[in-house]
Length: 257
Image 1 (spheres, helix red, strand yellow):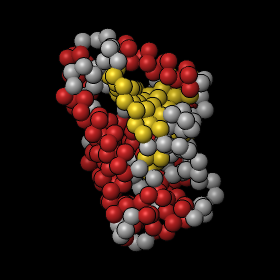
Image 2 (cartoon, rainbow, N blue to C red):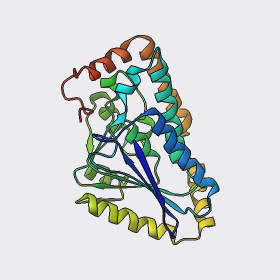
Image 3 (cartoon, helix red, strand yellow):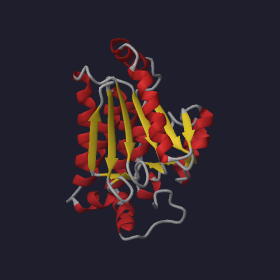
Image 4 (spheres, rainbow, N blue to C red):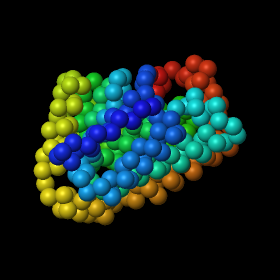
């Protein structure tokens, strides 16, 4: 994947993920994105971040094909570690993060979106966790920041995605727009408002909001990852990922993009 970064004179850092056909995040790029976000702590010129994706979909999750090509358990270990670092970096980013979602937001995408400060989405966007179909668990911690608890459970157990309009009804998605062009315009417009505020106050505001969260998202997500490791040791995870690579999937799999 190529991650395009630009910072304008107003202090808006724009990060665009671009990995056709479905913006699946490989291990190296997941770490790289985390590194970029962490770096804004030391860059006073950055006042707000807009994270978006080019092409089809915001993010289809981890790169399962890459995971299966790595020997022994290196794929699952590095995928889990890199996702942990990325989700932490989004959450702990020193400035507010605005995430713009088009088409679909799955797996890793949920971890990104659930840790963002503000979400915008196109009207055709859907949000889901296909983890159970991949013999894994994880990011339910972040899904529960987007939808109510019982809806999150139902979505996890069935791998059924939820539309952007539903998340907007919960207040999780700030605004739903018609097109990708509208999405870019609205996200940049919102970022400009945030960037116009006193930067010292905004960094303090971000830290204060994190400080009053009821759930420690890092510990909660790490707990979930423990079950993913167990499933991998039992062989269930490998079996599911091999089936994905071979083009064999259970019916109604939300991750089939």
